[in-house]
Length: 426
Length: 106
Image (cartoon, rainbow over all chains, first blue to last red):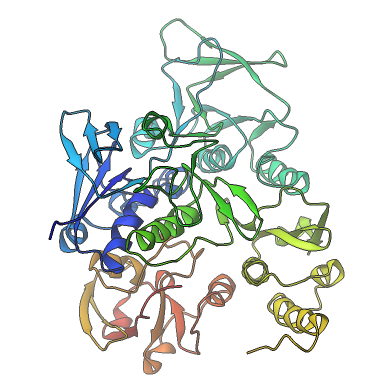
């Protein structure tokens, strides 16, 4: 019998999970993980949080120790990129010249940071934050008193600003939109985070784009960030966090259908036989929202990695998860469940000023998502409501006399009653 | 070193020597203890490092906080001895601790 080989392109969270899950699902063939970074798969979320802050040792970033991959017999080729896929012969070619035959190919290629597009963007003090190497390259600049300009008001920008200001850097945060986190949350929650950062000492400017980066003294040491509002902010270091572009070039060159990422079905299958995709790069259908999503999160990478591994092993485990995200800034833990886009009602539970509240997002009375700030119970209950498709009412969600935990149970009873006697609870 | 015994759902038992200050999730991952995923990296955000603590030990642990209590609601088989491994930090008083790992995390 010919041994099957699974080749995984991408050494991030999704790739690592797929490798582990293949073994857990009983795959006995060869598993080869190819990563373009020179290190074993690691967790990215701490890069802009505890690792940047120097509170987490590098060894703790790795998803599994090297011995683990040996034990489960997963080969890895690190620091190498795949240059081509021949889908008819089922062969991948590496930049180093090596070729590998595959029975199944998993594209877990993630993405690359969106580059700043303005004059002077290649100034030596301009950094991005996506990889371990990125953080290591900027860490010695993270000293008290240094002037930092953060460009971008997403998770990465806000988390970087929070770590920096705590370390005594002088931080200016430039946000192109009217509020931070505008792509992922509501103006209410965005304003809350804006105010939190300002109170912490960050100079946070909204509605502010970047015109150019100048070299202040002509020696590459200090960058001057020129804003479209006419300011010129000096920076010993600039960190840009303006989003991610999915890596699709390899897939496209192999004839795999791509549209805002690599298009997959609920099993992680692409348009080409025996090629799958998982993680940040995969545009997938979500049955809860009944539309396609491309998510950049650990949860998505892990759960899609599992789904693809199951598919390859002939087990039907369609990917149908409630997306969830988290962000740590100062003493705040933001936990988001679901996707709020298209909401027509935002229900606040608790007092925003107390720094412990949740905002539930509804569309025509149906729950879409929650942002829970230091409110883990609301996050948990929202995940349950979303995954079970329970009905909710705005009045109850904001009624703090009802414990968060009870929201799901009583809603469950209510929705069963509403649906009539034919629906029985097991 | 603090000795912690992880017992799997099939009864397999393994002793792990955990350095003081290291949490039980990291110790499990370092020592390839199955059943502990730790997807969020130990920041109490995912509940994939659920363990059942041997009842005689449960009172010796630092009480859980509100976040851990809430996150445990995501687990399938929570009981009064449920904790998240990432929130149990090895200290000398915990030498000999026994925890049971689930068959798989949710």
